[in-house]
Image (cartoon, rainbow, N blue to C red; front, side, top):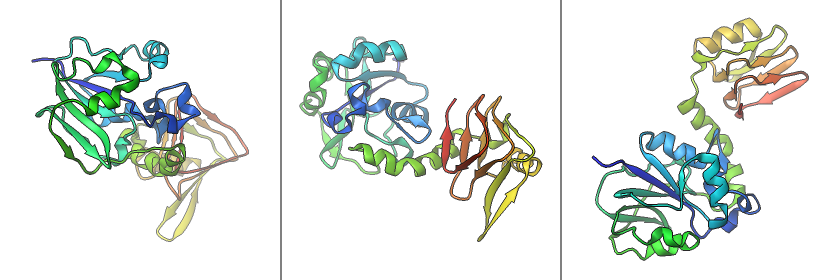
Length: 256
């Protein structure tokens, strides 16, 4: 059986994401706890080979960073192409296997499933990839259930909800290995009330999976720090030292 391949691509709206997208592909931006491309792969295609199509001047740096094949479709027998502006936490993406087709939503190509002969010329001009993909002679159909972003402000707007969804997918409070020092507090919502717990109680609740708090290995919450979970979860990665006087409001993600 041939290797299943997912190709994440940029389309012609990349310039809408400037200035951040001037130095990285749009799918390297973040929304929630992960980069756009990481969330697509982790949630839907964890066992697939991953390749990328991006603007040609970004190829070398991104390729060196990811150690993946970029703007290179050589040897691929069939692939599922996924638009790099898709927010996977809010979307339902198509399966790897199926007939050749192109999926369109609101006049944007969101996905395409192609065989080798159908994609033979696509990587020749990565800067015109979306236009070339639109010209491939396979059936096209409308798809639903896909959330895409087109502007930077949308990533900010979706970020809080995305952190909540990613926390449920990636984090298990019971696996927390960090420490909450005496003198620190964790505030949670209980019904219509807000309750503050000291360090010992908060650690116990976290380890029992009863509050949406994750502390990575080596993470430390020092005295006179308050973690407020009343509006959403908090994820604090490994070896992060939170010092006073600090108030962290959820939803929040601090990546190690």
